Length: 110
Image (cartoon, rainbow, N blue to C red; front, side, top):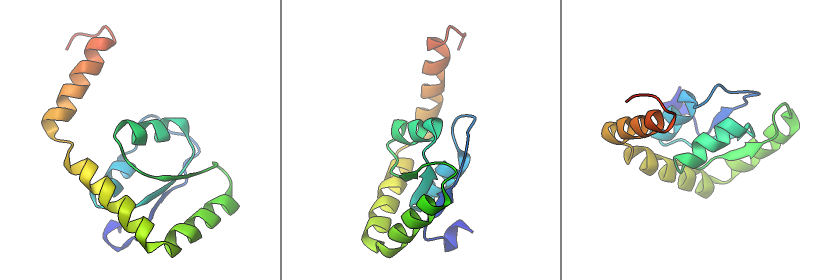
């Protein structure tokens, strides 16, 4: 499905933290359009990913943003390449080290 998609849309109304779909889309070099949900935006920004955002539960805003992004091939390509580059830079070692930092900072034993 991702291989055929020109844009991945995440019309979330809530999250429970990081989005595996966001990471999968970015890792496969797809631009992302998402609902403006604080956890989702924070996860994307923390990892340096680019995405477009629309208010949650606003189909008209989502449709307009999707039409605009689909019409803008250079922006699609730029977001896709940027996200792919960011995901390629996230090694397993870096991910594990970050988890250890977070566990240590929360008072838990690592």
